[in-house]
Image (cartoon, rainbow, N blue to C red; front, side, top):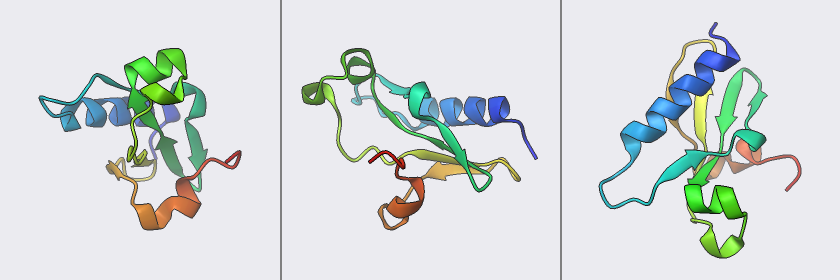
Length: 90
């Protein structure tokens, strides 16, 4: 089992490694990170949106990064998993 801090580090590295040359700068929304059933759910978006919170700056189709805290495996969430990773406040 890995710690929450280790899982956050894995998520951050995964996002950096996943960025394409033409992607805008992206960042994890640390205020909305949560752990659910042993999975760290790390939503992300453009740095600009994270600073302004203006919906005009928000990127669409940013499925969250999921880190299994038992194994350390990391991947992007899938649309069909939305009920699991969707914030309870939505």
